[in-house]
Length: 190
Image 1 (cartoon, rainbow, N blue to C red):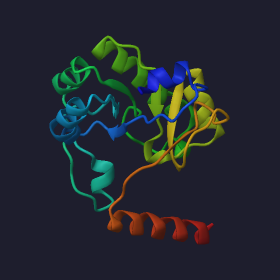
Image 2 (cartoon, rainbow, N blue to C red):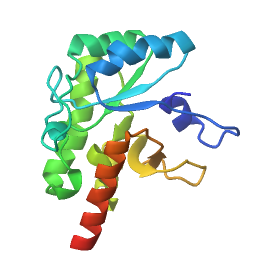
Image 3 (cartoon, helix red, strand yellow):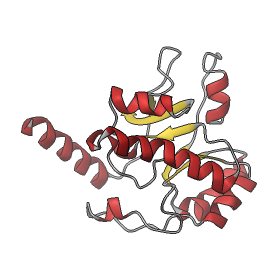
């Protein structure tokens, strides 16, 4: 099901799967779209609104592989294929670490930019780095988003707030170890 369908009917009975992709990587269009279409699946790509055609510098700084982000024309192809887009902020900054005015611009400004560029309503948000708190969540709601995805691991039920949706995400062994190490170090450095 699409994230928009879920937002309209979150209490519907039965199991549902929503496919989400963060960052707007061109590889998802090139490699994922044909597979999605072959199996009749929809998906949502969360775009970094201020960086079309750029690359994932936030991951490169952490030692990850550089990925090219979709251009405006590639996003239009994604949309023409019946897929959805949402916002992943303006520049992929950690919203919890920003002043309120900066966070508001990252959240609301990205929504406006995407709506102006693609002429589609932007109803869904994904927190950069999965990093959020009540203040950030409130800014997401204030901007008019219907849902927001976290990187909190888990399954959503009717009790899950729509602006704190959990996800199940595949990681390589190296990514999983790196994330576990980061969380342990962060926990003991507080």
